[in-house]
Amino acid sequence: MKLAGLLMLSCLLLCAQARAQQSVDEEDLVEVSYIYAAIMGSGTFKINGRRVTTLNIPFYFTQREMTQEQAGIVWHAPVVLGYDAVSEHDWLGELLDDDLMTLSLLPGVEYQMQIDDTWAIKPFAHLGVTQDFSSGETIIMGTLGVRALGTFIREDGWEIRWGNAVRLAAEYQLDSHHRTSFGMWETGLDIRRDTPFLLAERRVDGGVYYRYQHFVPEWDIDRLRPRESDLGSVHEVGISMGLKRPFEIMRIDFDRVRVGYNWGSGSLRGWSVGTEFPF
Image (tube, rainbow, N blue to C red):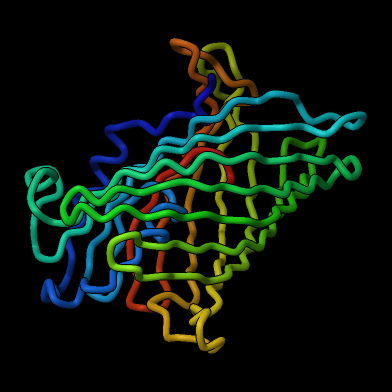
């Protein structure tokens, strides 16, 4: 079992200190959706005055490596801890308070196909469950989609990655019968450059990246018409540092860390942390 570059706890805690700029009444959370937090990665975000903090631990197991001759198969079992503060609280001090705290398990499989020397196509599917420990709500959720990643490596030490993805996501809350479903299209550019530095006898590279996500409005399945959604477009710009070859500590691979700033529709602002370029 491997971990796709386990997030450094100290980096997450620094990000989690960001404060919300406004508060909302608890009655505004009657129809809260959980699936956004499960797929947005690790970080702390402000959406319409609500501050949502998530920690995503992306466990995965590679059954078969992707090569030019054969497709790869990767099994995923991400664990996501989510915390939704409805007022001006300190994240660490209020982690066990009565605000929304959730635990999600979203296992899935990814089929990786190398099209040529540059492009790889990666269809994927996830189906899992979330538990809200505050309300006792249990949520069934799933995602289905495909990613495409182009990698352009230059001899002078520069590396450019261009990623695109589309996905469908949906959730169903067993107690309240509340449903959420949406589509999302995203694209991103990751530019890296080798540095003269070594870490654990491995070459270090630094990079900058940009990612754009567009959320298609939610659909009311019964009436077949769109509903208003909190999110429309989300931008993320950040920096990263990585190693040409990962190193292992206690059977966990470490190869890259990135930090990004997010902004977009629904008054979304926040910081995110992650590992590899998310394509």
